[in-house]
Image (cartoon, rainbow over all chains, first blue to last red):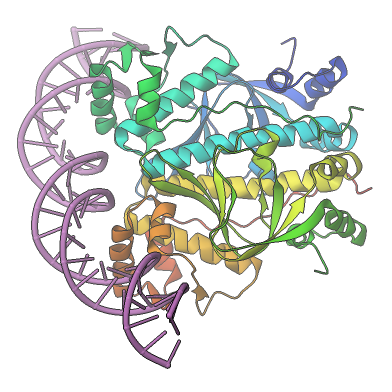
Length: 244
Length: 244
DNA sequence: CGGCTTTTTGACCGAAATCAATATAAGTGG
DNA sequence: CCACTTATATTGATTTCGGTCAAAAAGCCG
């Protein structure tokens, strides 16, 4: 890996100097490969590891007494995970690998050093975290007020958008490594109803499914169904301290 | 105000030096009184102000095309609001005063200076933000997987918990300045159904409502209905840089 | 091929929404 | 302080969306 996924990630939002990239690379200590289905951190277990997703898809989820599950968030390359361990000793939710994946561990002492020695990067990290928060609130609104169609539509759009922002051109469809069960756990629906809902979306020509390739045919209509707001990130750099 | 609400707030989690308290006090520039119902920041409007709640209740909400609304989060004394303006120029949601309130404005240049000059405080702020995030994910799980009873129960418990952590002893009940409409917008339900649901909770002896005073009679049973997990915050101080 | 998961479809049920009306509380101006 | 208006709470009747249960079809993989 020539460049840490963290530097690449932050680099999407602002211009980073070579020094800054080096510092960010230095934050990560060792990389780990994890297998599809591996639980990186169990709910209620000890909370400790902080890491960045290098490749693959992960998800954060909570389990209910009766075995039902809610997936809180999907994570892709560049996403920073496990920060809640800074405030909670017991993990509030579990982190699982959805596909085979690679992660880069972050040493928390070095994170402290980053704050001490590279305030601009620390402040940047702080600002970029807001994007995650807003994504969460958007999902919360979708779960609270959207119909099943709306929830699934919102999920697909958010997904396409995040993938599109990060890497692949999503125009001609993208691979969706999610079972309908998992889509249900993301949207708060049952797998059965996800199936029906997606069939309807297909029949109405809003999306097309071919194998596990999903293509959004009518983004505007889908966005209307989803009550989806496109949000463009623009990190305010005026307030950031000068680089060291 | 002898001490800024921010210093008080962070002081709940860790020991702060007198110097640090002073620095935090210096972050805020001027206080504002806002009337019940006042919109401090409209959705899609310009995003700019960062502030701390000094007194009163506020909420963040999103509006849908058809006029329905989802309340994303309630805010009390010490809560830091508007940070999403660091990453978004357009406000992702609106902020409204639920009761008459006072807020302290935060100067964003000084926030930058805080990162440059007081890395420990910056890191602390970063860590404490995780609490807000976990609260959000808990709400998301509740909206995704709880029944109406569960959602209302979870709301009441979260509320009692946050109020209890901050200030008042909640044992003998607490004032709930929320209409059933608003509770519905928090839980993703209709006002009518909130009414029925709360009546049932009362009849079952889990809660008691007297005027707008709400008392939780059986916390354990209510917690079971709500799939509620109590989480205790414990900021890890080991990684924090040394104070300046 | 044979056992597994995942997807799809049908029949039925139930929780919450919707529609509608009344009751109660809370403001507001005279 | 009272009459009047408006917001909020409560209850009932009905509808609808999504869940549950069950089974078959289609993939997937050793």
